[in-house]
Structure formats: C-alpha cells, structure tokens
Amino acid sequence: MRPPDGADPRLTGGADLRQAGADLRQAGADLRQAGADLRQAGAGDLGRLFREARESKGLELGDVAELTHVRREYLRALEEGRFADLPEDVYTRNFVRLFAHAVGLPGDEALELYQRERQRAGGLTTLEERLEKERRGEPPPRQAKRRRNGRGFRINPMIPTVLLVVALVALAVWGYNALFFRPGSTLTQTPPAQTTPPTVAPPAAGLEAPLTGGAQPSAPVGGTVLIDILTEPAGAQVSVDGFMLPGVTPIRAAPVTARANRTLRVSLDGYQTLEQTVDLTQGGVLQFSLVAADAEPGAQSAATPVEAPSGNEVLITVRATSWLEVYRGTARNEGERLVYTTASPGAVYRFTLPVYVHAGNAAGVEVTVGDGAPTVMGSAGAVVGRAFSAR
Figure 1: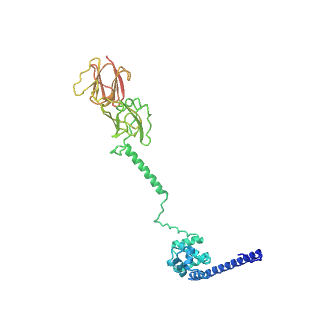
Figure 2: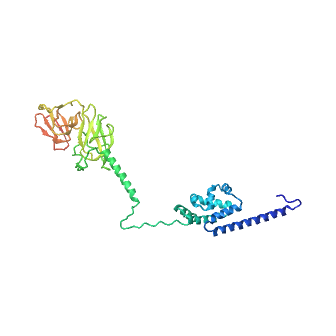
Figure 3: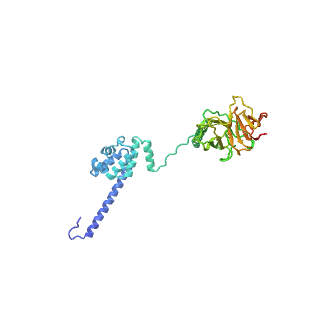
C-alpha cells in the first residue's frame, strides 16, 4: 500500500503495524473465546460449533473439504454428530483437528469435545480406548497375575531347550550306531575278552604279528577304535561283521566298534577268501598274506592217506584252525618262508629238514619228524615257535 502524496512513510508504516497488532489481539481473543465455548459445550455441540464457525467465515463444506483434503461426507457427519458414519477413531481425530484449524477453532479443545461426545454416543473400541490413553500419556493397565492353585503348574522356560538338546543327542547316537553296527546285531553285551601278556597271547588268525607297530593300540574312546589293515598283495576288500569298510587295502585309521569276536573277511580276485574271528577291543595294525586260489605248494589233501615222512623230513598236520608260519632254517624270518597263512583243520604240509614252525594255536598243530611219533606243539591258544632239525 502506497502512502498518500506528501505523507511521511514512517508515520504510515507505524499505523499499519498498530492496526495489524490490533487484528492479532482480536484474533487471539476470538480463539480463546472459541476454546472456552468448546470446553463449555455439551452433547451435540461439536457439530454446531463447527457449522457456526464455518458459516461465520463464509465457507461451504466443499471449501473446507478442499482446504483439509477430507471427504465432504465425513465433514457433514461431524457437523451432524453421526459418529457411526465415520471411520476408525485414529482417522477421525485427524479429521477433527483439520476441520477445527480450517474454521479457526482450537484443535486440542475440539478433540477433547469429540472424545466426550463419541463416548456418550456409542463408546470407543478397546483399541481406540488404548490409543486414546496413550495419547493422553496414561500408563497401560497391568495385567492381573494368574493365580496358582494346587492343581496348576508353570513350565520352566528351559525345559524346551533341554528337550531339544536331548533329541539331538539321541539322533546323533542313532546315526552312529546305524553306521558302525551291522544290521540285525543284538544288544547283548559281549563279556570283555581276557587279555594276556604279549609274549603269550596268540596273534589273531591271519595276522603277520600281534597288534603292534603303526597305529599304537588305544583304549576305546566313545566305543570305537581305529585300525589299519594291510594285505599282501594290496587291493583287497575288507568287511567286519558284514559291514564293508570303505576303500581297499591298505586301509588306514578305519573306525570300528570296540568289541571282541568280530568276524573279519578279506577278499581279492584270484586269491582265497580269508574269514576269521578277531579281537577288536583295541586298535592297531592287522596284516594279512593272501593265498593264491590254486593249490599251495607243499600242502597235501587230508582226504588221501598221508605217507610217513622219511628220516630227513617233517610232516605238519593241522588238527584245529591256527595261524601257521614255516621257514627254511632254524629261526623265524631268517630263511625262505614256506608257509604263511591261517591253516584250516585237515591241512598237511611236508618239508625237508631243517625247518622252523610258528603256530598261533599250538594245540591245533601236530608235528612228526622222520619216523618219530606225532607231537602236538603246545596247549590250546598258546603261541609256540620251534625249530626242527634232522636227527
């Protein structure tokens, strides 16, 4: 606004500021009066105040809808007090605030009046009451503690965790047993085999030597031991109690269940299949020498009459299964190796003296030197080595 010609601009500007201040004071007074009217209003007065304030500003419902971006039917429902036609309370409170600001009414007082009228009209839902209490800063009600009686109990929160751990352990044990125990085996516990000093105990049938060297014997850990299996020649398949070990010989560090009287089977094309009972309560090295499928030199059939040995011969007759080694000479592992196998009952061997005989089951090996009487090498299960020379 331009000041009149010849008027002092500073004086004119001061008058405008004073007029603006008076207008603001009047607007504040009007707003306070509107707030007081809202607080004193009774039932159904919110809609009337909205309508009077809108009409005093010369606004139609369509004008307020454009200013607030609220649908006209919701604004009309507020003016007419039809709360059932309004959406959820969380949206309607925002409509009330926007409507109040658009027509010059205090928003907080309008919201309080809306809450009172809506509660009287039909009440708020549980969700709406909780939201309203949170808006007013009221603490939520505490849940009543459930009473215990003599028949009730509370489950410890650690019990599900413990049950889960037990289930996992049981699953691991089941998988372990399924892997290392042959199907169909009973759960009868085998009595532990009595151990004897290494100098007296016989080697397992098919073993080149007792379980020494290589992987040292160890006490069972978790019910298993580790064994190495070597064959001459290599490339044989090995099974324990019908369970095939992975790979072919030489087999290293194979885990097996620590148990006595295990049935071990070694097979290789072109060689006789070796099957025997071994004690696997301790780990170690098992060495086998496989016999070719054709007849072994020096062996005779037990079904035919055996000719008595001459004065410089020795006749070896196997009466019970035994590990048998025969060397040319008078000491073990010094001369030519003539026999190195698990001898079955009925096998007969004839050699020229001198020879050295090593038996794993001395009671099962009978030796006849020249025209002498047959002699059993020792007691059952005893490991005996003896040199035989011409008389």
